[in-house]
Amino acid sequence: MYRSAYLLLLALPLLAHRDEPSDPAAIFKSGDYVRAIPLLQQSVAKSPKDAVLQAELLSALVYEGRVDEAADAADEDAQNFPQSADVLAARGEFAFYMGDMPQAAALFNAALKVNGENARATYGVYEIAYASSMYRTARLLCMRAHQLDPDDALISLAFSRYLVGQKREEFLPDFIRTHPWFFKRAQQMQQNTSEVRQELNGRKIFELDGPREEVTIPIHNLQDGPRLIGQVLKVSIEGGKPLSLVLDTGASGILLTQAAVDKAGLSHLGSTEVRGIGDKGARGAFFAIAESCAIEKLKYKTCMLGATEGKKGVAAAEDGLIGTDVFSDYIVTIDFQRHTLHLLPLPDRPPNPQGYDRDPLPTEAGFTPVFRFGHHLYISTKVNQKSTGLFLLDTGSSLSAIDSTFARLTSKISRDERMHVTGVSGSVSQVFEADKAELQFARFRQRNLGLTSFNLNNSPEHQPVRMDGILGFPVLVMFRLSLDYRNGLINFDYVLDRR
Image (cartoon, rainbow, N blue to C red; front, side, top):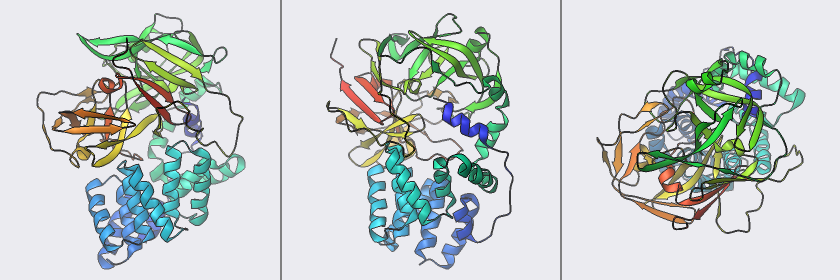
């Protein structure tokens, strides 16, 4: 689950800055959008009828997450340049960032209809395909976008993931050195993981001890007084007393408290940060490696664990949480009513340098495509039959919520002084209530009166898309969930009345 990300991270060289040109178009091409924005704004003021400059400014604003400015620019550009392929593609980027995937796809395709060789539109279609688990199609689109505009650094960054061997060794170090703004976070992490590299010494992590077989594992209720707020798995580290870890579709890997790591006698390795709901920012964290760990019947070797520093917890359960992506080699079925986690191994596929597209949808009714960004699984959700956005599937959240910026597009919100929301990053200072929020996802519709609303997008780092909402445990517990990480699919089986 961690392997590919860490291999890339540990291979990164130290970064160095290099003087860049002052031409705004060249700076935009380099991907230094912070520097490009004020220069593009000056150029747009001088040449307001230049559609390319307008499109570049909108794209830069989108990348930097400047939502209000980007929204105004997108509206103006739509009126002033309705048939510009560059503007259509930039508007598609804004729709993609805001989570409106149908609108993004429509705009990218409209741009390609005007100009079939528009690189940014081609790149936009690639991003949608990649998030949709259409990896073979995405690879071809990325290659095409790079062929159309090899000087666009953002496209080149995506293109680099498909280079192998000597070509990658020749391309990546110089690209990283000359485009440090893309790699600030990676540089910080790379400098803090030498102890992890040394401890692993080339070993694979989370290697299953035994064959991959169909298995059913018990899960257990997590209560807050009389209220059911989640489910936990029992996980043993180094043969010790089982820990209670929240089963969390919104998390990745295993994240423990420092107390749990120390009790297991594991060494603290390196340093990193973790971030979640809350206004207190990132929390200090570290790594630990256990020679073995067991998740009920499943036994693993060389288990890399994350852990938060200090005495504060990381979840409602006292020991930590476990992301369902740990089981991404299986179809994962969570049956909340029967208190089971069923794991069905996905069939092996031979290595294919071209990658694979999603398998055909299962013949059983109910499977719905989801969008995958890292370990996060998002489902396209329409709110009040007006705005469409991406809602995170998060069994680890004891509430469902809607982002306050997104909520204002479809509903009235008001401060809720009685509601207190806390997460990995501490408490949320400004909590609102949306007076009406009807959510429509997959083939279901849920009416909420008073859905909790707060800022779900407070990370200072670049995010490919905004989180428009959370489908938390109170909603997801009504279903038997089947997750297919490899193919980007979920089955919502409504079973509230089944006993």
